[in-house]
Image 1 (cartoon, rainbow, N blue to C red):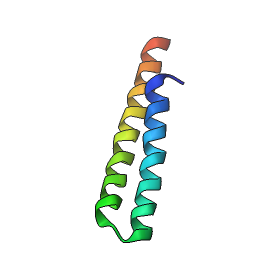
Image 2: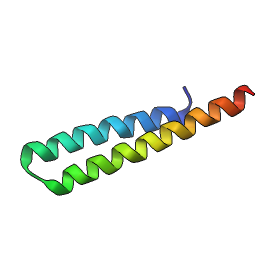
Image 3: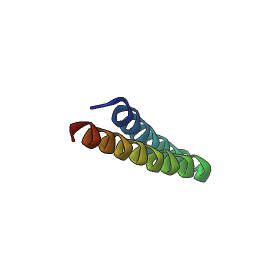
Length: 57
C-alpha cells in the first residue's frame, strides 16, 4: 500500500464514523460532511491504486 491508499482509506473510515455520529445526534450537516469525506477518501484511494499500477508497469 502506498501513502495515498492509506490516507484515502483512513478518510473513508473517518467519514463513515462522522456520518454515523451525525445520524446519532440528528445533525444533517455532520452526515453530509461524513459522506463527502467518504467520497474524497475513495477517490484518493483509487488514485493510489493507479500509482501502484503505473509503478508496476
